[in-house]
Length: 404
Image 1 (tube, rainbow, N blue to C red):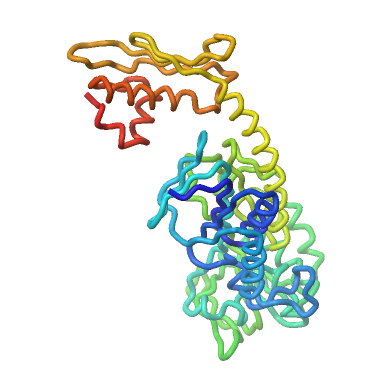
Image 2 (cartoon, helix red, strand yellow):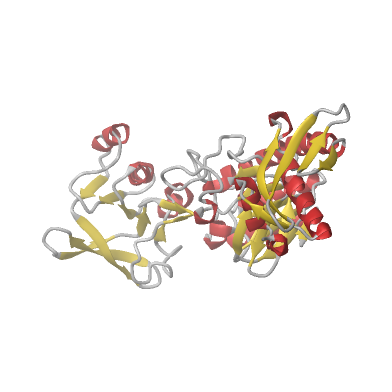
């Protein structure tokens, strides 16, 4: 078991910035990345909108610089695929295909990937005419002809943005009307260099060294036509990498983790940063900003934990026939576990309860643990009928030797 103060899931700009700031706050921090550092940023051939690089910078190089910058302050980078997470209470546990970890604070920075059209050669043309972010890559097509695919707010916003840069913008949609909201639709009528192509879908790119055009299929007639263009912007939405966190933190209808500008989720000690969380703008710089913000609230969280740990250490665990309980130094009882005897040294765990003002200190878990130890020492068998006890037995296979 490897133990850290903070574990960051995802090594993109949000993750490495969060790790850097946490490490500088003297918190033992680890980045856990599935594939390579940088996330989506690493696949970008040229980043021109990140401050400090007059000539721009290759996305892979910027990723490596962020990684090395964090490691300079002691951040540990490890690689593996996460299999399971226990995020409630303390400590938080992460299991990968090769190791197990514990931490006090967990940062989710798993990002979001643009949805692709699954065209032939689409991936290899990325950065050679195929793009997914108008604000990131639009300037590469200054005074050129581009096509935008999509019918929602993102597609319309991209078309409007590109219309200020490009000579001509085609907006391609598979239906005969857009799905965008009215506030997005009004400016389209006033933009002369945007042309609609209705009832059409892109079926194939045309290219040499770079994209030179696309083949379109009419969704009503099946007729195929060719459109010459220098760039194809695919704006059919993004898919956040949140499958692993369903049922752990709150997620919105689009699949993004619900976290406000503090980056805090609904689970204490769990934070979401970068493209994976609900936010109005997803850029490298806003992801990095999230990481810095998260570290501030994590520092505050550790201060609270220190106070709780002091409070927890002052508690006294006691037992009497058929009952384990916890008292404060003033002999105020703040938690208990009740046993119901049956026959042959077998007991049913009927209830585990903790006073609300003492929640979050791990009292209930410790009561179950001490009951299990007592069962081993006294050769008892236990039946966890209480829901909390059942969950603890599921989480701790090592307890099962005491099951009746």
